[in-house]
Length: 346
Picture 1 (tube, rainbow, N blue to C red):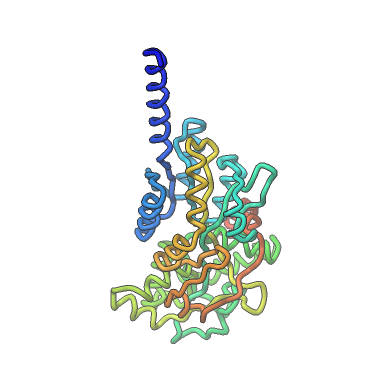
Picture 2 (cartoon, rainbow, N blue to C red):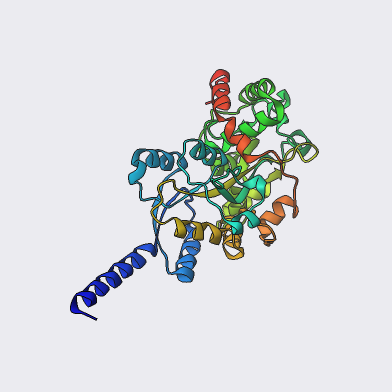
């Protein structure tokens, strides 16, 4: 081989090596602010050699950043914690539809975006139920075993809740709109406002503590906040939970509202193969168990079973969840926000 050919071969090898090294990277924009997820990322890197660079922000911040960055965005994977925001990212063209038999086999159709000829824009990986919590000393369980009863005059002055415009509530209200229809849902929201013990404020954990302290008697919360307090090392938090009852609403009708945390490949991903590999990893049994036992969420992948004592204690082992398409919840968001404005739900 000539000296010139040797030189060219060396350059090609160096370029291939640089490309290979470059490919062992994954840029992740994540709205999951859970310390227990660190094990997910560490184990993925150990298994694949792919280093994860992570940017943390809330759902809205991540979507805004993707739009601002455009084609220059370094993001490969987007993790969001709300169905409506996943839907918003899809309709704004921020995600890249993908085809993956592993994901299609693992994730039930109810918990992923509707597929197009190009592929599926996003997949859910875990669920959390939005349930009603009540003071067992002052409230009868049968008075709060449906979402409808939150608007019943019998519960006037009893309810604490976070902002109506928070994504968790927007998704709940979007689901209720899908079940009831817009007119009845708006009347329901007006009834909830009339039953508030105070103006909406704080997060879900604050609502639980407000019921435990007697500031109000009924609250709405995602299940993982409740599970954290049940499993807490703080004796005051565990004692507070002993006073609170938990009900999964609408077991005799449409079922309890569930929201999802999910992921997508960014539209302008520079490492799309690594991105798909990461999403497939999240659908595997190991990662699904981290969702369940690390952050007290229910896994969604087919065939995955977990034993989380706090989740078991809350639900009695199982509960009936609503079966409306997650995408319908997202599609109702604009209507819901307009209704909130009209009824004065802060």
